Image (tube, rainbow, N blue to C red; front, side, top):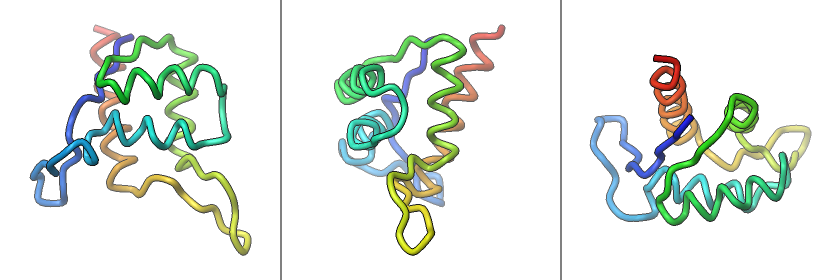
Length: 108
């Protein structure tokens, strides 16, 4: 399935944030490249593609892995017994919504 994350995050009013710092793919690329979870080589490859605003081609296993990483919040470490999340809910939810839309489109 093809996943396009070259989109801007939106605020709670539904307005797009401006600039590359609010591009879903570029933000996810930074987070994936800084993470110590998952398949390092694959996530590095995805990071390069996302940062350069390219689509990801993924199979069902890849999709499940990325979705699981996002649902876990891509937490890297724990402080005082609590996970430290690398993405807030505003970002995670919008990326997860895009993944689900790509999955639905691929099944048609």
